[in-house]
Length: 301
Length: 80
Image 1: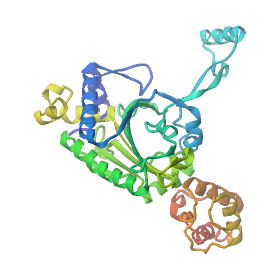
Image 2 (image 1 turned 180 degrees about the vertical axis):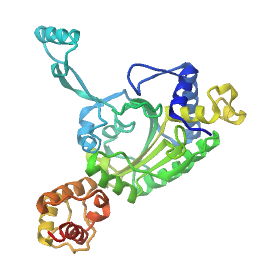
Image 3 (image 1 turned 90 degrees about the vertical axis):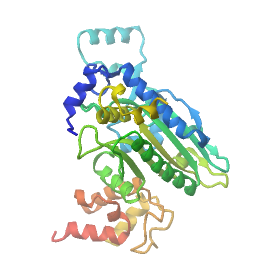
């Protein structure tokens, strides 16, 4: 297989799978792309239907204090997207209008709001599950839009994308066993779709020099795993599924406790839905009608 | 040097044990130091000893004990 960023992007566009817009990483998705995405997400629902996960949907904006309280702004200040808006009166509105139409900077006419774009699919759920968990802990699933401020020409690196997420909260033993089970299951799922998937220990792209220590710590403690599939490069395969074990981090910040009153541990895993879809197009071609029959049968049963 | 490192641990390490009585090879992460706290310890050591840890020393293991930090600082201040 030949991996080339530009020809893959152009192929996605030429087949109407994605629709370019002026800014990088914010392209639209066509009907065929969305059909594959929805059917993959439905497949994830089918294989996990007996898990007893509670289903939620959160909007693309979340309470800004969540990223302030969880060290997100310390770890990834460069990726955060905070929503700013206009709080002025007529006079300031006139000033804003004049500046916009004159092509002048207008950012200083804006003030910070109570919301930020959701930086990780699991974030909105932790404040919601604060308090004492049932004896078996809780498992939650969501499909949420996620924002990362990282414009890029790589189609797999988007500013805004969807993640099918699962979150487990409970004792350390429960959470680790659940994560390990999903690691196996996630890999099997992607292999069953004919994708050349592999799992590996990983680290988050923590910012700056401090980030080097955080990333090394995460790797040494094996807190993050990814399932990777080559999409735009053979040497640097794309993470299509990511598993994070947060230990007591969110439990401590939001006051989540186990039934026996210990600080709850949490873990999450997420399928990057657009990335899975792109991996399918890269591996099997731009026309789903010509994909191998077993892959089609799995997605469109 | 050890006393200066202990003082920084008291201020920045967020330990659940007394930094003054910790063994030099005691595991600071076991003693409650979080990854984010280890970053603050790193920055405070750089200020205190007027050093800059090179990239290859920005590792979890360099900050895991008082002894490990002493060795790293000794290497960086060698000959100065």
